[in-house]
Every structure is written in C-alpha cells, then in structure tokens.
Length: 136
Image 1: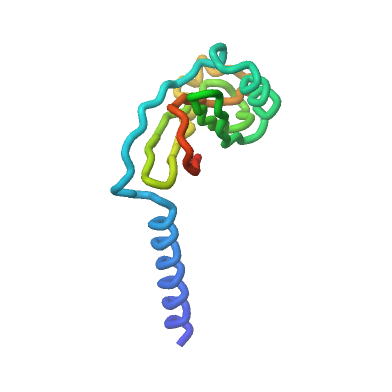
Image 2: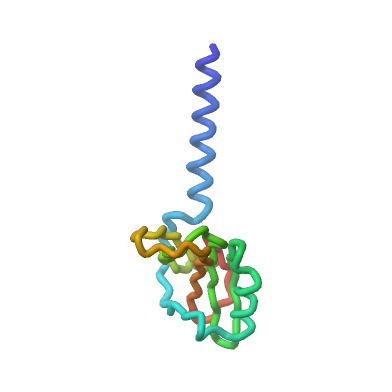
C-alpha cells in the first residue's frame, strides 16, 4: 500500500513538471528568432551603464528602452573568479512575449584565471517592441 502511495506521488510530481515546462514557453513552435546585437559596456547609454554598475553584485534580469531600442540585460552577479562568459541560448518572440534565455559558461583555462571576483553581464539590443519580456 505504501508503494502505491509513493508511486502516485511521483507520477503527480512528474505531471506537474511536464505541464510546468510546457506552460513556460519551452518548445514554443510559434516563436521566431529576433535579430540582436551584443552591446559592449563602453557603448551603453550612460544611465543604463550606471544601473548595471550599481547592481552588478546581484543577479540582474531587466529591460531598458531608449527611443526605438530595447536593451535586454542578464547579469549573473558576483563570481569568485574571472574567466566567465555568457552565451545566448534564445532570443525569440511569439505573438505575446519576447523570450531571452542565456547560459553562464565557466572558466575554461584555470592557468589564466583571475583571482579577483568578476561580474558577468550580457546586454543585447533589439528593436523596441510592446510585449512582455521573459528573461532566463
């Protein structure tokens, strides 16, 4: 009897996970890729640069709009060493939202690793849109 209860609980948990992933927009067949440009720190609007600097020690997920440009910002907070990079996994949109997904990539060459903390942050620029933005 106890095994049936455990099995039912595991089945329910699996169902919730599968439904949750489907609802979060993963695998959205209607999504189309968005053209974007990675923006170097020195070429950011001054106000945005200040906001990032003030918040760099914690995770950042935000947008910033200036005129016809929208900036999608993903910062990973303080890391104990240097050598990190960020890859764009997805920058796409559907009828209702923009999806921006990134991955933090760890240091590859430990010999050239800085012992100072780093604050990996990626900023991409897209054409401004009036849609909800999901940043992961």
